[in-house]
Length: 132
Image (cartoon, rainbow, N blue to C red):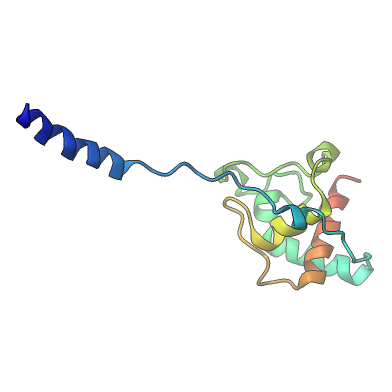
């Protein structure tokens, strides 16, 4: 009996030590989801958003927002097809802003590269992919 306990307890603690904690589901904070886009698109703001999108986003999200960039196949979960209006129908502007600013999953944050106006203009650009 003592021999069994001497084997069982170390194995029990080893199994506990090797277990990974359950991942916490990712979500946008409610206050961020309720944010409203204060920016109105201008030719200059759209040009800047498109330029930044080309530098930082198109390689995964595709030049037209279809989710078929050259690196898209390496990303899990795969990028959404923003040319399909239903892909954005349940996402608020505030949620898009938060995701672009902070990143999500493998997508890096743009918060260091763009100010808030630039981030909001990126939201406008992403929404524009579904209207073409």
